[in-house]
Image 1 (tube, rainbow, N blue to C red):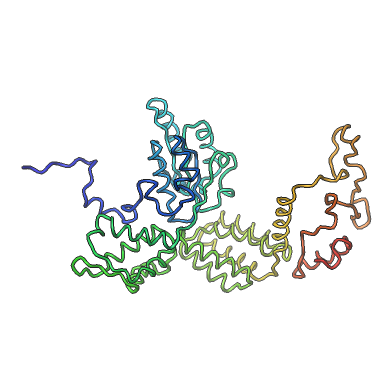
Image 2 (image 1 turned 90 degrees about the vertical axis):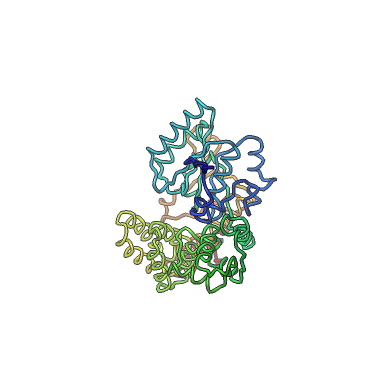
Length: 444
């Protein structure tokens, strides 16, 4: 009997084996998802909404390799939506508009709703995000975005307000072991072998908390391993050999990205320019986005240096603009200048602590009424209520200062800002003590 011919839509076992292990092992249902019980467990709000026939627009925020893309595909599938996926790195407004037009036709002619999944949505600029806004608002599209960056900083407020932001935590060690053992037991290729895993801990360590990278490493070790019949032994030496395929072992979207930027920031904060330059070199040599580094330096200039050297913020911001305009490889010089300067100046986190303390105070005790003399009085009624009366204009007084109450009643002597004795902030501390001796005295 002649062998039945195969259509282009059918996949043989050989076809599957040619796909990467991480792709072959991708979960197909919510019940197959490892971890994220809080997000997609049986009692989770998202699961309840889905069971009720509603799929909201969502932005998944979390580290790489935790399943953002997988969750998006599963949600679209279980809700019965068309699934369209693009990357913010390679797609523009034109492609977004084409997808919106097609989504309108699908809904109008076939009653089929569309999910648009945007990987790295934080890379979309304002114009690209604006192009999405109306389609999300009127239900033409259900948006699912994935980002490793805080969406509060990277996604425009109107779009953010129309999405549920869901934080995905890094997978635990046990989660990753479950993923590895499931791959060995169920994968179309690996299930044909008997595995011994004395190198499991090394596999999980070098996988760096990233499920995709861990499975890629498992696949690499499998192909490197000697096959004794159908027995495969993966030991620590073999894992290290596979991991050494990447000399720097730095994935700019993986945990090494977070570990190295953490070491970089802590080195600048710790006033060690040599260590900071080393980690800067590691990141740049590994292909890290220089603007990502420049943005972090701006935050550090305020959080860790502050008024001990106010110029640090100006330099960091100028460095960011220069890096954007110049690009690599010359941007490395700009980053080196900013990094070494910020690492070498006095440090203070007093401003950072002040706003945190003030916000916590307001959160716990609420906002107090603004004193009448500080209120604006644009109408006659407000003037009759004594808004703005008795306010003293500081520039009319010697030294451009006059003692009067600015804090709400009952908080007159409350301190939030405690300047240090370092750098330029020491002069601010002395100046404020002279202006407010009763409040500050020796409390700073």
